[in-house]
Image 1 (cartoon, rainbow, N blue to C red):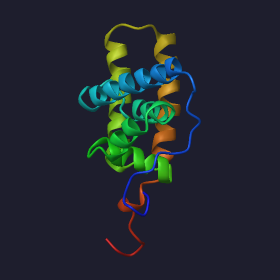
Image 2: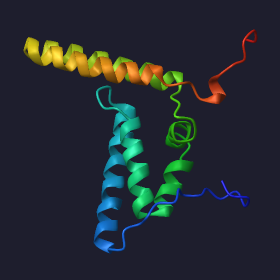
Image 3: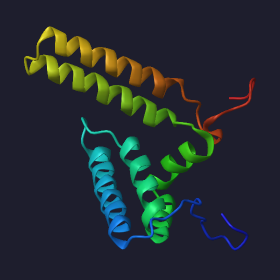
Image 4: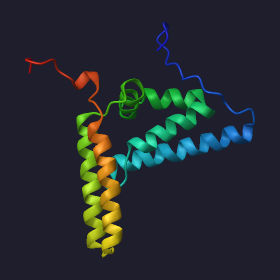
Length: 146
């Protein structure tokens, strides 16, 4: 935030071509829509789409970027990641539950053992990454205080 309280967009080289900027804007809008859907659907992630949207809006539209990072629901998730590379406890839990549900759904759909093994390996790596991220400062507590 600036001294005036305005949210500052990260410095990014915006494409000179209006066509390219519009492509970035379209990608940002689609990714934001998928992030909203992911917040409601159990098999669709939210955070990766938010990160794509934030990047695309940085390249295309400061006003859309500002709207995204100040959104009451999506903004804190992005802020935690952009400022601290942190993932909140509830987001971690949701991510792991979605990954587990996805794997179970694939097994129930009759996917082959090789496909399930590859999916399990990929989801395990993704899950380990998500779980290994620190919690945001707002969710940390000092030792001895609960």
